[in-house]
Length: 144
Image 1: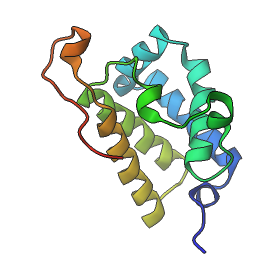
Image 2: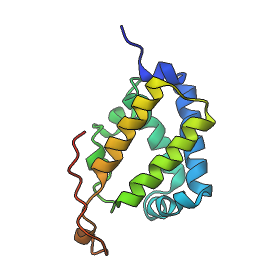
Image 3: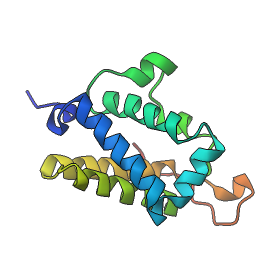
């Protein structure tokens, strides 16, 4: 039987630390600027820290707190109200890569997780023109 990713990472406490470190980076790195602004237009960073923990715990094979609370784990639905450009996805990935490094998470399993995060982030890129924003159509055509 293969090990769950949440166990590889170190359990819920390690996921909580990863999320906290990720959002600390979002709040301090230049790459986090647009992400900060997007979250501040919504419920704010305190809210998103908790929801990210809730989601990632289930996504990584642990208890599905997000689904228990919201009835789904659909990332497109969660982000449908947010204009997401390719650079936003890359910025998210940069911050997450740094958080993974800060938490000493490395190796083949973590590289597969990074690849999964990349695929998902690019899937969430949407048509900025539909939001009335400058930019070419970047419709998320990748499949999860």
